[in-house]
Image (tube, rainbow over all chains, first blue to last red; front, top):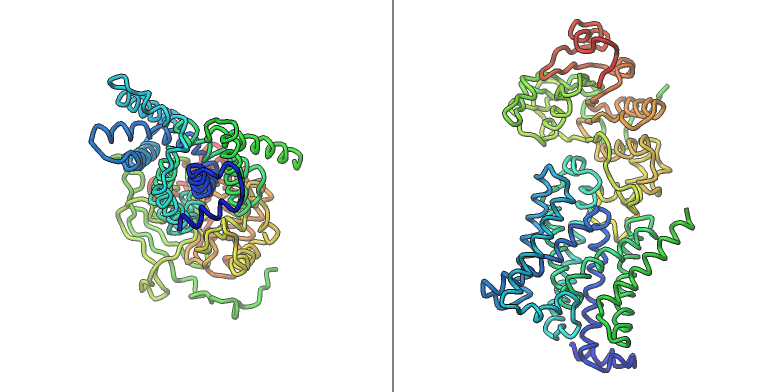
Length: 279
Length: 258
């Protein structure tokens, strides 16, 4: 099946796509950006940009703990830790009387520090520096299957919980009065974000992963009037910037994540201008 | 003035037009953090009546509402009884929260918001014709048809109250709970809101509980008034409660009820 996709990409006749690693990277971008674009709409509407930032940083700790505990796969230790960390942060946020910003900031700093502490022991952090800026060569053929499953599973879950999450975001007490399990819904959302973020981190990098989640959705927010418009703009911008950014990074020889995010940020600026023109 | 034709053919007929079936609150007590917030609250909320809960700030009005909605653990019983005093199944409650604390820049139309409550289909994929019809129908009940396509963030306080009321009315509830819907709404909007509530009461004959700030309007619209201060100090017809000694003591020094 993958070979069929490869030959289809060959038909495009794009020079950069001669290489298998570029084909893999392109497929990964096409599979992951729509999911991040969708999840991003809710993350920006519920003012969770800071939260997902903290979540991205926790990937370092996840990998570090995985090494200490002897977990074979980086990805699994990142996802497991990311999910636990996401649930912990949102539980603290619900309980805490301090402002959510402060709590998330403390959690974020803690997870970066703990990750650096573990990964730099013995002076060997250089090995992990690709985690910070991402590496498209890191996308292997076997990963693509997981990404496809993640996309299907993620979108399916998103369909199931979106309405409940929307009502919870507007008014938790109203949502509860209509039988929405608000806590479960919120927990489901942060888990979904954690998984999507961790799956993308190896090729986008810890530093920029949050931008990929937030910036397209933030641009879409300026352009849309309805929930449907927001989803469409956000997914569209994420996808177009993802593909274009990948191509730009190939010809300039730069990190792909950086090129994608710069394009997305340009879209955001344009969306701001559109919004002001419309009034 | 409000000469509506009988509701036959409009779906659900009122379960009873008697004014006798009621929601019975029997010795409701709530303790939070070791402190008794509500003690032995005994009251009835009759169908076809607008029951208004008044009291000072911190008297436990919102706590009582939350207990009624099943959001807070409480002792005592809440029962839904018919005209012969027999329990009728599940109590369907419609709730209009105090205010919506949401991001006004959110791209979300009123129809999206209501559709999320009415339908399983995720609203980011769009609204089906059937859901849109239900939204329009619900909004028509509160004279808000024109709001459907408007972004929720562009609605005024009064308009949002009407949207919330339309939402709470669908599906038609046995008990409608309105939690201080007066804040953030101007006097005109408030009177319009209460007129709409009164009309819905006549048409659907449901029990309505309103938590209110505005004593002037309470006197005008309420059928029954309950004065709360940790427990029920006084209840009855508006004129009776407003001239009671308990009322004078509670609101001594002007008609400032908050």
